[in-house]
Image 1: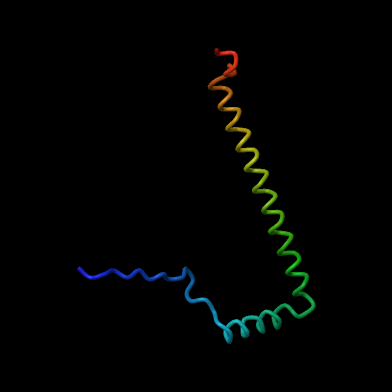
Image 2: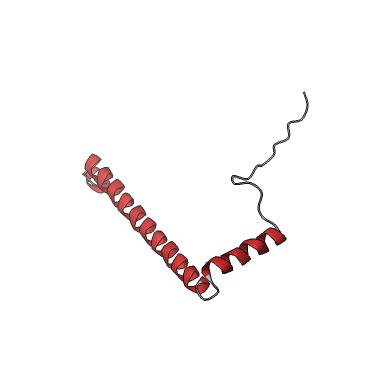
Length: 82
């Protein structure tokens, strides 16, 4: 049997190269204007920061729920069981 070759296909197609990337950046500047791009980047960064804070808070709450569930199953600490 022949050797199988795995080809990785990007999810949304090929990644744009130099010329394509320059055209995309030019279109962004034309659509939003040069003065609005820093504001857009700042708001995007703020949104990412808020998302990370929310995710961390949710992880802590889930961990607390796991600990409470474990305590309900085994309410007697291990030191008192001996």
